[in-house]
Length: 126
Image 1: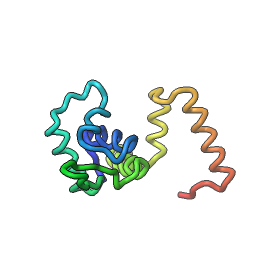
Image 2: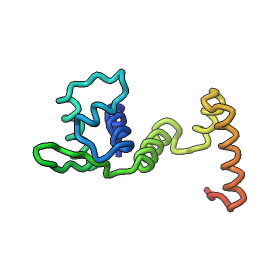
Image 3: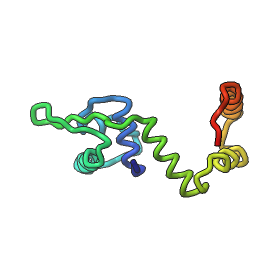
Image 4: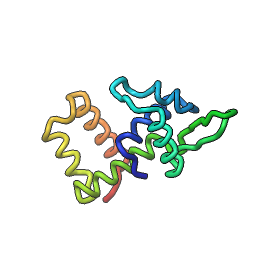
C-alpha cells in the first residue's frame, strides 16, 4: 500500500492513538502542520477507501482505527524504494546509507550486531 507524505502523518497519529476522531487526529499532528479540518476529513476518507483505516460512527462523529500496521506500511514503502531506486536489492541501499553517513555510530553498531546474529541463525539465503 502506497501512502503519501500527508497520509503518513495521519497514520502516525492513528498508530499512536486509536481509535481517534478527526479532531483528535488534528490535535496529534506536528505543530508545523496547519491543515484545515475539512482537509483532514478528506484525507481520512481517502485512507478509508484505501482500506488503511476503518471508519465507524459514534453518534454523529466518525471514529478512525488503523487497519494496517506501521510495520506493514514500512515494509511496503521500503519495497517500493528498493524497486524504484536500488533495482530491488537491499545491499546497495545499505551501502548508500553507510557511504553517506546516514547512520549514526550507534545505528551502525546495531546493524553489525543484527547481521552477526542473523549469520549465527543461518541467515537468509539469496
